Length: 324
Image 1 (cartoon, one colour):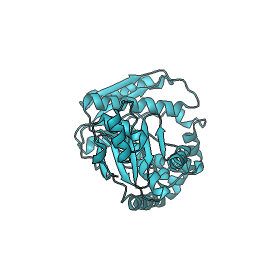
Image 2 (cartoon, one colour; image 1 turned 90 degrees about the vertical axis):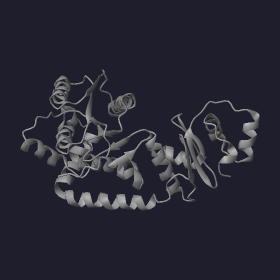
Image 3 (cartoon, one colour; image 1 turned 30 degrees about the vertical axis):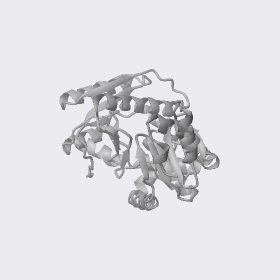
């Protein structure tokens, strides 16, 4: 049914007990891919207790670790973003503390089309339109999304055929959430009618992205400092920056992209500094280290951007060893 190109041995599955993650749980079992599970209870629905109980039941039955987190999150307009931030912070804490190599998520074809349509209505470029990739390399782990070519209906049919229990989250029908609006009014019907064409279109678009990304690898990297060649093309430069920031867990808006290109030297989310010079693109964590006068003068002579200097001082790079 699905090709699993997961080559890591210590994997964490983001689990919810819904159709997608339950199907993925059993598909991973079929493929003998090792994994443990993690689930978050937001305390918005009485059913969520049953979902957590089911996660624990599956973990016990199939000898998996089950990590749980319980929080009380208000059902406000920004709930989805807030919930996602909490969920991924929880996953990353587990990955760091338990030394997992990868996170496996159950995003599927309907999710990919929903994202595409939402970005399309905002005004987005090629990279932003595609969004979800089957593999994303983060700084300390890899995210795998093995279901991106499989529709939700196919996953539900798999569960029904094998008489496997799953839950349906009632909040998924609430159209106050933008994703649900696009799901109910557009993406589900499009997938049912044009599934094969949509799959092929995504493949062509991803191939185009790969062609554009041939020169997108850093020419210098040490710890969290990356230096890229300036492509002398705003579109290509912002794609390079966007990709680097995604690896660092930062998603930027169109307004932020425009501001990066306008200012050329900027701090994003008060975490990452970016500088675009005539020759290079520098990306590094924001640092508060105090530099001595000799180091500052060496940075000036070697044309190191001002907002990058404190970090290279922190990680003990000599300015003369970088490009000028």
